[in-house]
Image (cartoon, rainbow, N blue to C red; front, side, top):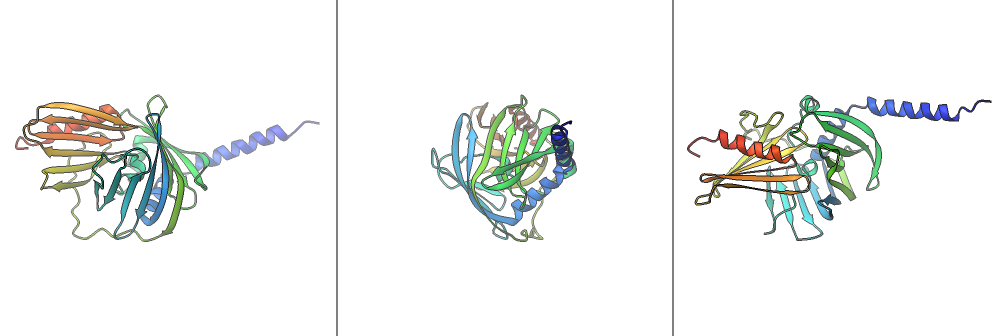
Length: 293
């Protein structure tokens, strides 16, 4: 008598694969963005980068007075506050720029744009901090951005973990909740009627759009934030008199910092993108500045 166990197991596995492939990765991204905007939470994440492991406490509040606060629990004491579209350090030392997916922009997500830039698919299930998660892979279509692997809570849509993947499929960094306490969803804060939207302008790099901008007149500093829907890059333009021309660069995990002094202006790009992308952002910004700058 022939055994039906193996064919049956294969059939079940095949049907499971078809079910995963049929899921809409874009819908999971939309659920993720909605959850980030509507839910308050507290937790501790494990941040793996550059051959070391750090712990960071995260407190996030949604609603009218929304903010996110990040405090390092290992290594040098660092604390970062993100509120009202601004990010500032709460301690003199350099804040940990850890993960664009969890601390990045909350600009409206253009799913069609993301689908053009990344090949996305839902790849299966996992368990993170006691929550059942769906895993999503986003493979870039060009060399201007990294791939991403996301763990999204099956029930709430919250982002439970994120990894950035390099061009040789190597993991550049990974952040994942070890502890997480979720609060109920609330209505997202309304955008003030007099809120000034950033000027569209020309795209500095293909696929990246300007999503926010601010000017600190007291410091002569301008910040512009660009996003492709998954990756985020901040550009800082600052008046620096008497500084010799030159360039500088550093990297932490997948986060690249590249800067250049051009005349009396310093331009710095910070984001989880390949070094070449950060350099091209700075070059394009320098070319866009008027002679008066």
